[in-house]
Length: 130
Image (cartoon, rainbow, N blue to C red; front, side, top):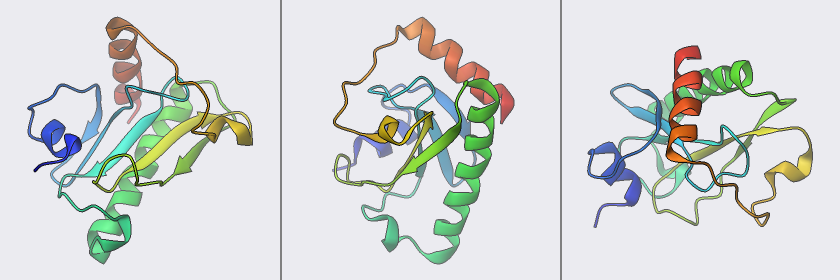
């Protein structure tokens, strides 16, 4: 069965896209730790990040770097934190989270909620900076 991320890639489930190319997709996390919290995935469905072939792995991080730079331009933060957890969805992915302190990457914290309109504006702003 396809992961929820593969279903997003295939257009079966809507998302707030930030950037996309033939191999990778970045979209807003709908349960974010911070405004601008973005997920970056390979379009190829592979569960474990370290099971990606070397070229796809390197490309994923280069793609994530472009997205992170765009997030920093649009969302006030000290840095964009990076987390790879991989337990919640069986599809390799990178969390890019605008942070101002180390505890901003604590995934046990309550998640934020934004309206569809707010998410659309956030995605558009970051996307225009990619």
